[in-house]
Every structure is written in structure tokens, then in C-alpha cells.
Length: 253
Image (cartoon, rainbow, N blue to C red):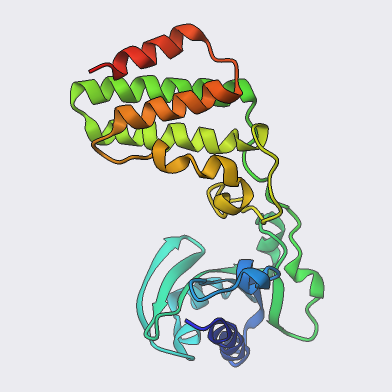
């Protein structure tokens, strides 16, 4: 999908909202908001539609305004406030509908006004609550979680619960490893995502990212993946030798 088509679609949604009579604004977020430098053929449309008090349900229950620019071939309500939807031409969007007063309690990154009523302030695209990058955990907590995820996962691997083991080792433990990245490597300039620490990780932490394939070797290689994660943790942190030995013991075939 050509990036300019995504921008044009969002503008068309704004025009459709304007014709409904009770819409107040359309705010573009992410790569169609203030981070246009990231917009590419694989981007989707993230946006908020802001409507008058008492009309939120009307706009959620009737999506004619959304389908005006192009037919919708699939959608589902992923939250109580909005949908994920696919247009017939392949453009994918994720959006929420809010009444103006609700924005004060919604954390989001600053956005770009696509359309608004003249009497609506430009500040509508600026959040009152700025999202934190993540819940902040201490280094000790992250290390403890990563190590115990490996231990539990390897126990399940030994029991024959390979799927559960894969999730603990190659999912949960790797998630904690990702959160520890800022303590092992100076992050690059690529923007992070306050709602998903995995976004653009390869651009932000290229050194650690090079090791990720060996940390996630797949369903049949849980032991090998666990040993790689453990080795990376030992490379950068002081690891309790007892739990490290217990992890390695479970990896012995």
C-alpha cells in the first residue's frame, strides 16, 4: 500500500465524519500522526474519532462513516471503545471513538489533527495523561522473573508440555530480556512505543537484537533457547550461581 493512500484515506474518513453532524474531530496517531517519517507500505491507520456527548454509541454501532471512503470487509470490536477493521483495498485500521470529556482520562501519545470543528481547540490532540513507556520494574525484579521463567519453562519442557515451555522460555523470559536492554546497551534514536516494548526493537537495540534468533529457536528447541537467554543474562549481570546451575541441569539431555 502506497503511504500517500493511507494519508488520503484518513483525510477521507475525516470528511465523512464532518458530514455526520455530531462529530468533533479526527486525530491521527502513530505513523499517521506526528511520526510520519515511519509511514510505509506496511503501516496501518491508528486514530481517534471524537464525538459529541451522548453520541459515542451511535458512532460505534453504526460504522457508515467509516465505510464511506471504501467498503469494510472485516471488523471486530477489540475494545469497548473501538474496532480493528480491514477495507476492501487492503488498508487496515485500528481506532477508538471517544466523547470529548473522556480524553482527559485516556493515555495516548500526542497526535495530529486530521479534521476538527472550528470551535474545537488544537490542544485536543495533546494528551492530558502521557503514557509511561511501561510499568517500571527494578533490575532485580526483571532478572528474577527472567530466571524463574526459564526454570519453570524447562520443568514443563521435561514434563512434555512443550507449548507452555515455549511460552515461558521464548516468550516471557525474552520479554524480560527486552526490558533489560536499556541496562545493557545504549539505545539508538529510533522511537519506542509506550504500549509495546517490542516495536522497533531491532532499530533501538541492534546489538541485543542480533542474539534474538538464538533466544527464540522454536517449539522443538526450548532447551537451546533457554541456554542462550541465560548466557546473555550472565554476560551483562551478576547471576545467582545456584539458579543458573539449576537451569543448566534441566537443559541436560
